[in-house]
Length: 378
Image 1 (cartoon, rainbow, N blue to C red):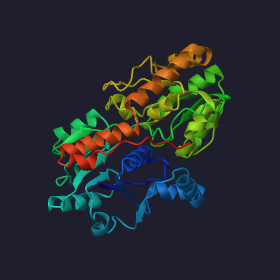
Image 2: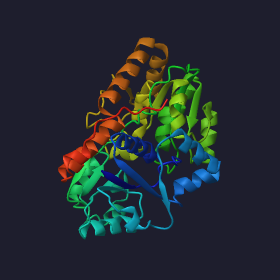
Image 3: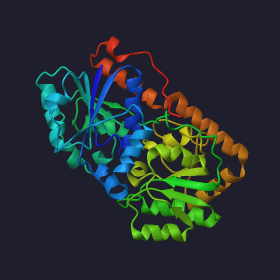
């Protein structure tokens, strides 16, 4: 089957976590024998910011670390759709795409194009900026892939789409797996972006205060940290090391004994059941995880066994101390979290789910199910 995917970027992960999941899904589809083409804007803001900060060599390094993956660049709001859609069986358009591209691909589907067409939403704008999402013309789409039940239900309740499915993010286990060849030399790492004041207070409570109280050796990676945030990290004794290409995250996890998850406010207050990509990747790497409170409303994991929950700053400090001093607890969290990912939450599982959705839309079974190959990058 020929897949055509319109996304913000395949290679640039500068403040662009969707690239992590996309890479894994593309890799899994290709392993099953499907033809997959990703189109991305040449002037996408993630790509431009990455090049501005780190140069073109950063993109070259990422591409070299991801053999077998490639994308097509286009100028302006959209590529030549006659070329891009030629022979397509299934088309996915991500919600970061230009609204006119979203609408035009939908018009072609409505006019009788033979491909199946899905809109992919991996953000909180359905609740944080509903007027923006309502402006997308999805009338020609077969449905929406939403990365949580709450968002799926919003599309249906607001009648933005006739059909919607939950399609959670997952770990790209070709890259994210334990690195037992690397010994942990520091206590804690947090990988995430500051940006937009969506969790500033939460980062104070669940990261900066506990690290300072315990005197931990701690590392932070990410982008969009203003000067005052850098000052606060320094005051807490945290080593800030800037942007980290996502393919290097497993080795950084391996060099630390524990990590934390601090969800953005929308995912704790309004969008329960959506963990975002980082916990999947942490557990896939076998690093013990302590998370600020979020409601696993969809039963993706087993809190208390796969990871620990901290209710406030004091509780986070207590839980971190437990993990760092109790080797049996740390080993249990590592093993349980890793088992949960491998059983239910890999990009291979999500590729199977996507193929099942397409089959339900009428794609012939013999074009959606190929023998699954094991994909791994050393």
